[in-house]
Image (cartoon, rainbow, N blue to C red; front, side, top):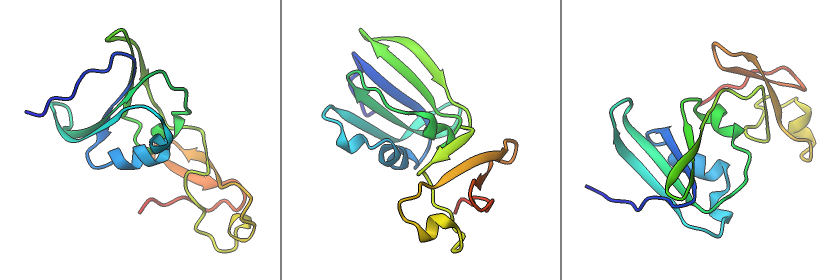
Length: 141
């Protein structure tokens, strides 16, 4: 059994869909942090079968709403003195900015590179986001 040290102070990003850990790592720009970051892939999970986990040492402040877009089942445990002091449950964000690109070649974001890619949640049940500029629906690959 693989043993990863506990986090004394920091974040544990848990219940990540198996195989999506590196995507979360990339979206949160964890490579730019100057602290220990552990990515555990395909850990055993009673609820999911397999899951990924990311452990981040130290107190860090970052926008975690993008995680709700990637996988709203992700949970975030805030750790201090080896104790969970807060559990953050995610949900689909109402808006995402510069997370995905609009696929419409006629959209202003395809022509003007400096314009941010902005999508609004238009159908929560079906997880559909639409570009605020051209109304094109985002389709995940």
